[in-house]
Length: 306
Image 1 (cartoon, rainbow, N blue to C red):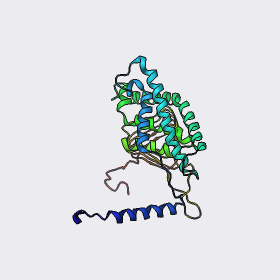
Image 2 (cartoon, rainbow, N blue to C red):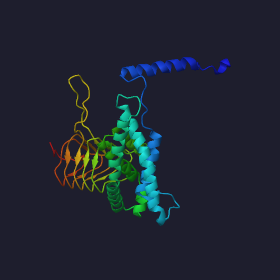
Image 3 (tube, rainbow, N blue to C red):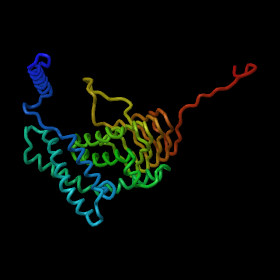
Image 4 (tube, helix red, strand yellow):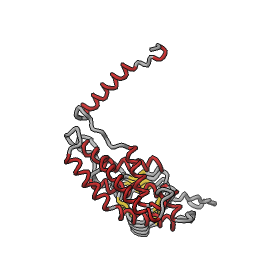
């Protein structure tokens, strides 16, 4: 090889191999690492599931009314098999076997069957989300515009599908699905979050909703809203604890305006309005109206105010 282009490939290969080996040993992984779910494959599956849920708007452009049921059925048969393969990869990575065995595959099939059974419910929830966006935004001309244009709806479609998988025992696949929406929209909703019907995220960029958040019905958020944790608990050795409730509860009919930051396991009472850029770390009762503190400027004359 011409010395000008001698990159030292053999040495790099050896060093990278040593790095992989050390990382596997540090994690107590087996010699043959498992193959994780594929991000690209999950992206294709979610695109397909979106078109199955809304075939008239997100399906093929030449789809006829007579062919909708065939398209939905054929697509589901293919998509659910592909999803089953991805979930099998996740389950196998948590097992002791280096390969996907029959028990792991059967468990994945069971998860996908339960997931598929909830798709009609997801469609109804998404219809309520789309209607909430249409009614809540004067710029929206039609519900179809909301579906095909609004990043908040894209993020919610991903989250509602991911939430089911998260509950059924496929948290890695669920997280990857949510992160696909995060990358595309700038909206970060953890698949563990519980979200009621008629949920509307207007504009959306920078919204963060944590894992244990609970959101009621008819809730509206604007851009850059954070539903986060106030602090992270640790055990006696200083390791972060996981799985405990640490994010807000937002009750029905709440509006949270742009830039608001709500932290900790607090409750925002039903019908409340949280103003823009508010920093909130305590619960508020129903029908509260929380705004930023006002800076008051007064002109004192003749000794007034002393």
